[in-house]
Length: 341
Image 1 (cartoon, one colour):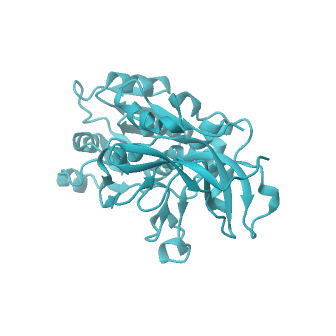
Image 2 (cartoon, rainbow, N blue to C red):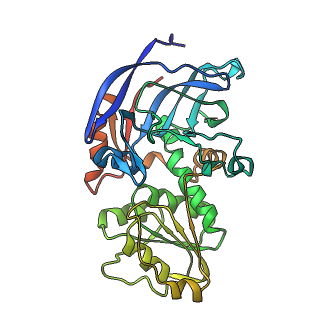
Image 3 (cartoon, rainbow, N blue to C red):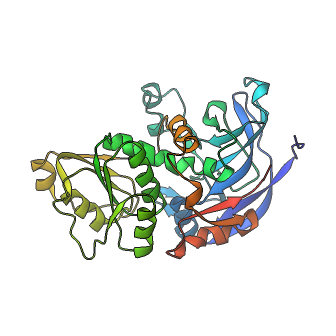
């Protein structure tokens, strides 16, 4: 095992559309934590929002911030409460630190912890750097058959798993997904892995629809076809676009479910008579909880293919290029590569 240095590289957001490579101290490991040498970090839409606009809703970047929360790596040191045997493990990191003592945490809903510290969300630094610390139980071991990139992308897969659970997807379900970006595409795979009989994807971009078809979805161009009357059991919105949400509601059968995953406008107008008269269930997805064991199984068993999502690879010093790569419709998922051991 390589000796741990005193300092590390970090890609720091210092202003809107400005990432600077800086030298920072390697973080100190707390007793219940592990130190992870980062191998790969996926670029998320939230990273792009912070890079382009300096904020997402109420989360405002008002000081230098390290972005990145989709990551994998190898444990290189452990705190005094963690077994030494964990050193050397390859892990997928669940990038959050709940307080564990609030009512939400104690009820099991730790993703709703009001004191949550989440990677790459102001003021908490993320993973565009060589080393991170995380509570030991949030560093999930992955088998050697799973690549570093796939291990990193278990974070967006976890979003999809949580959305599928909230949607009540089971064998035989019919599901509509609005939006065919990275989350939409991985949700296609997850819905099918959960047993969905049919997954329909609506997206105005032909390149995005093609990605969805590759993974087994039927696709719809919303500019040409109406979604009304599809009578799906659930609609999962992965776009955050008001027109997609409204049209998705029209596609849900009575008693079905709308799951809001995408982030977009803060307020939209909804057809209340449709929601009321069909007794539709409307719920949001805020990150995830207890999803990594399922994610590891789905990837290791081949039921979900994350490696095929990667369309761009960048070194840390080119993190800005990675953040801009999604501007082309052919791009699906970019990854920042760090250590390779």
